[in-house]
Image 1 (cartoon, rainbow, N blue to C red):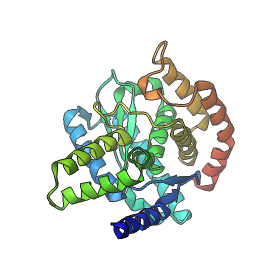
Image 2: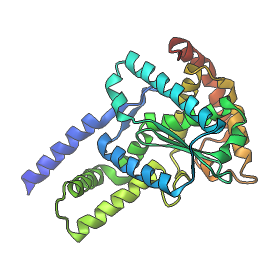
Image 3: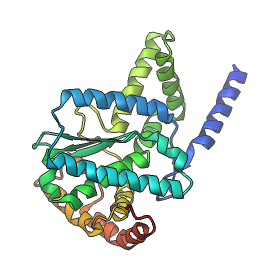
Length: 283
């Protein structure tokens, strides 16, 4: 038993060291212990189910604009990653951009692995391509920074993450599991749903931390500049978003930075973003 505990402790130590990574663009250190293939497989399954349950638009000017912005940002990611020794990380993403016909939902999201959805309801708030690029850059940034993986790791805890991962992998390989293991695996999937932002109502994002939201703002601003969009469009877009909830902010903004804090941050980061845009211009 003591030998098993020692081995487990060693495994945890190795995983902690190997799982400490730096967020692209910002360099912040993070702990993400869920294997990328595992979280992507779960994400893509959720995404496929979502597409079947919602009205997806396949043509028109709005779809063309979403995919034009998305393709530019994918090019920006490819350029930045390859020039910064991160080319091997590009395989972590399988980008796809879809538009949901629902004017009552003012939202957009990007699931782990690069599956992006934009609701038609956010188009009026975006107003134009620069505005739409602001929200798409922000959501894509969550995926690039692996915020869902980080949140899932934090929620499950080190031991729980290892246990949950093992159970998910065991289920995929057809191994028998006890009722207790099945319950733990179900819990792991629930935590994944929260981490990926898909919950009971897919597309109504469950809250990231304010730290994650601010980091997504910053990375999104870099993507805007690299793609040639107006970085000064970011603050007005978020101001318009804040007003869509009336007296209370919409669920989409539930844990985002305070409007004044966000305004100050976006202003502070604008010059830096423009320099990044000059260094890594998308052509």
